[in-house]
Image (cartoon, rainbow, N blue to C red; front, top):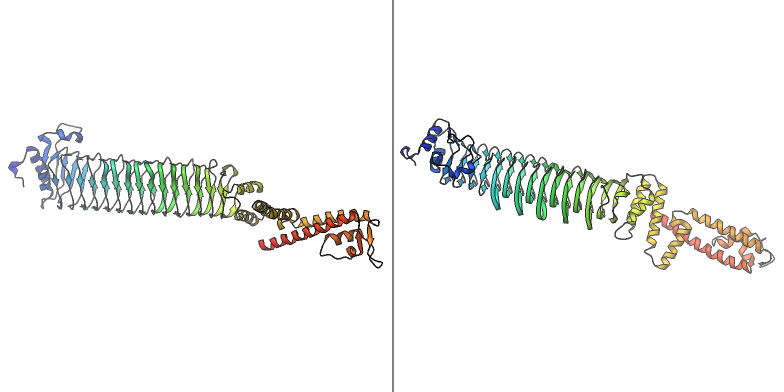
Length: 585
């Protein structure tokens, strides 16, 4: 305990100010205080840490302890202490770390102060903890498991602990906002795992650099309002795995860079409102949103760049409303919504997707009310829509990828009526894995539901023609005959045309052959009639008595053989075609 006779003039001034609720301003004639030069301040501005601790822990003290432009020497050790005063330091310099571990205080403000470290694990502050306006630490700020009743503010702070944790706020509890904006800068990582913040987490304009490691961690944190991070700049990974945010997450204009696979890892994130990663947002590295649940996901105007991996990994992502990738959105690398469920639409208008030789869009098993597959140009890479379920599909031939996987794709409505049936068939021909019947059946069903029966029939016929390529030679021959005679059962009227044509040919031949080349088989026979005779020969199931009564010779004999054979082929084709119709329906 320091006695009055042991105090320097500067310390006496502090004691007097503390007793009367005044400010101990030791700047003297210096109008602009630069605490970064505090190590050179002389004894006229120097106070021992022991005296500061003594004044703060005085049980009878009630007035705030205010210091401006002061150099504090020695270790300010307040571990486990109960501070009876507000601690208000402005533009001060500390030679040694400040220790507030397990301490309790009504309010602490250290605006513009410079110190080596701040150790404040399990600190309890009734109101605010403000470390702002140029607050600078040449090591670590540790507020892990601290309980702040009001705001934790590090706006404009500078933390310098490269290659390690610059701000450790693991399991922090804040009764209001946590602010790391307005030029906040950290060399080293910022950690908020398991934190509980009963207001906003503000990172607007912050700059966090931890190259090759993790820049920002909020894993398993709970944020009662929003995360506001417009213009955030990070070098290193951003982690938000399992975090719960009751408001929105805004990263508009942010620039996130990481040399590893993931610039942002947010698997299992729970976000009630909008996740806005647009309006100039850039990520050098992938974004992982696997198994996350979001209200809305906006990428408008963003740029995702991870050409050797995932631009977006959204496997089994759930979005209550829409996913929007518009206004020049660009993705280099795989953009995956595998198994995602989207309540409204996935909007890709004016977007660009590039992943040469790999998956550009992985929408396998996607479930969405609407898909606007209208990128600025055709994606460079495979577009996988296999087993997706889409309500309304908006697309354009100009934006179709050269490589598609449409197996199992189900959609209710095709919105673009200007696309011809022939163009749609070309769409199906781009199928990556060869012939598959389901895409043809789905397209035919969509046309039939729209009342376009002719288009539906054309698709069904083309399906059978495409199937022919998979058959052996005998199967191809039969398939070809089915197509020519009955159009695979979709044009059964062709059989009538064939019958009429063959009947006309037979009638002409047998008319010319009678009576020279037509021999009666007996005396009591019906009179020869060329039309009836041709019909009797042509249709196996018809018996008009003509073929039994008259035997052809010469050329008429050969004609009867041809008509008989053609009749059997035609009958078989009709039966097969009708059987196909019955099975189809």
